[in-house]
Length: 227
Image (spheres, rainbow, N blue to C red):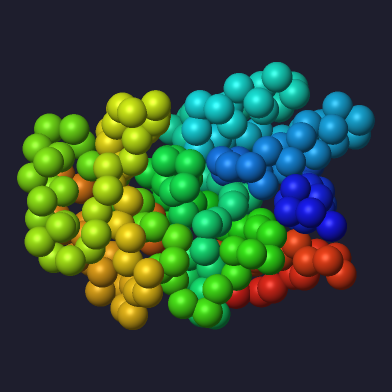
């Protein structure tokens, strides 16, 4: 079974948790695309009545094209369940997200959710965070100074590029990826980064997820991280 089949498998499994009347956070990324497709099929075939709150402009377009009702996060007073992907999940269910550059919106949606579910293929499960570069979203003004400070601290920063130009998030910010390889204390580093002037958000998602669905050759594995 290839990686895309595993992603499709967990996407289809995740939508079983969505009930009629729910407000659902819809994440961003290749795995989530399969989930949104499966949710769109339920909306069309079962006349499922749900509202989606999206974490990126591309998820918004996909969901609306499938007939899913979308509202802005400031139009709802809560989110029942957010389903999103992750780039790395360690043994303690701490995560790194932001490979798609949507981690600011993803974190805003997640922190306003009653429950959070991550859907991943088995390659995303690691013992220790850090092999995947840690994204740091920064405002363009003064971003070179932030970059220089990160370099001085030994964090091996690189501006994320697209076609030779600096990548822009949906908020028109830049992303600096930190190539750390191994992160000993994600909580300490998260606290350090968020206190840096010019940093909007980092890609650590710590003590947040409730349920993880892992796509494996033997079928989806459901892991309960927190109540």
